[in-house]
Length: 396
Image: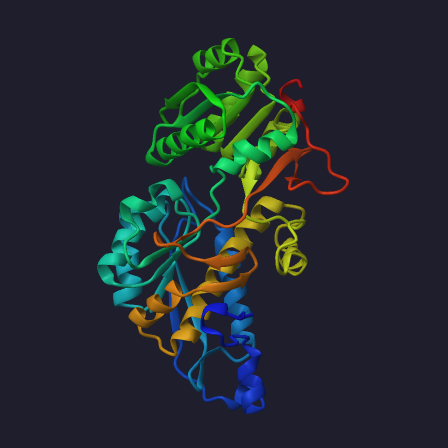
């Protein structure tokens, strides 16, 4: 479904073309509009849920006759290549998508791989709408052709408003992250925002990927009496950390499991994972546009799995932003599409999207919590849902 875009004052609903011509089929049918996607469907950074969201948005627009560009409706073709979590293969595939498959624009996979993709899009002068480029890294690579739809949990509101809404803490923070660029960026931003919010970062550690022994960090956090824990690392590392916190008796009142907690595999921890908090772009209870509709759509694929539903909705929204821009551009020229993306200003499933000068939309922040192997929204509060404070899995 294409939405209204306030900045240009014209209605972009896909059905407008139907109203003007009498039927979707009455509009002439043009050649396919190719959208390219190099994504990790396999490998260490695999996130195939995004593909489901992208394909749903494409399916919906094709179901009404295709995307209207001027007076012509074009079927949308999404070409998906699995980069198997490899930067070098991603680079090769992006060139293939643009130069051989003639993609007029790109959508992205997730996370660190997007850092590698943005410079390529800039070099090829092809618009790239990303779903999860770490905001703290955007300034280094984004350029004029890459756009980022990603809600970053690290902001002053987390410390000034969100955490205090859960309960009272001593305002001492322990941070532990992976020593990769994403982790280091998250650490720097968290430290700055915690300080701005009146918190004291008493422990700040970066560990190599694959770390199995967190005892020194835990002892330091415990002896410092840090009641707020912020973690940014992959699942297996995080699982080891949680098990060792339990064994060593470290029970923070707030335990934010970023990156690792946003994986369905968190359920491997069983009851130990109860009470872990994670930032979300979207939840079925968010009250955002079409939340109930999309929850029903993606629940058919990911039954009861809010984490994967959120990923699918994020991709769905990203594709809608791009398709809207193509319609507003009245052209399939990459330059015209890129200019139209810049003017995005309207309501989408993740909220009202408008890019800032750095090509980023930071959106809304929701906080969710693992409770009995399910993810539930705890901020803003939802009637009937009670936050675990401190987390019961660690002994609270």
